[in-house]
Amino acid sequence: MSEKEEMILTELKKAGKPMRPGDIAEKAHLEKTEVSKIINKLKKEGKITSPKRCFYAPVNG
Image 1 (cartoon, rainbow, N blue to C red):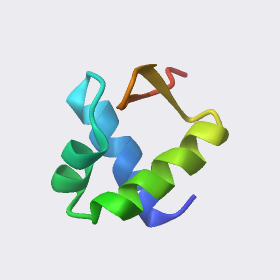
Image 2 (tube, rainbow, N blue to C red):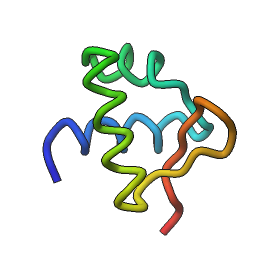
Image 3 (cartoon, helix red, strand yellow):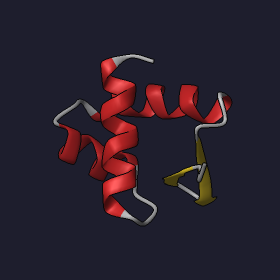
Image 4 (cartoon, one colour):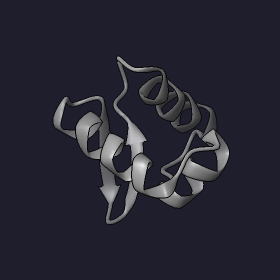
């Protein structure tokens, strides 16, 4: 897992609630487009979930 993927997962876990890509980007100090790409990758890998449209949360466990 890349450092940026780790950063995104860490921010999602710290938030304790689903977040939008823009909010994740702001907290992790990354570009929103980059965050969106990483979110798609993590979602395909089953590491994060989308409980509602445009919001993402880590998969528990």
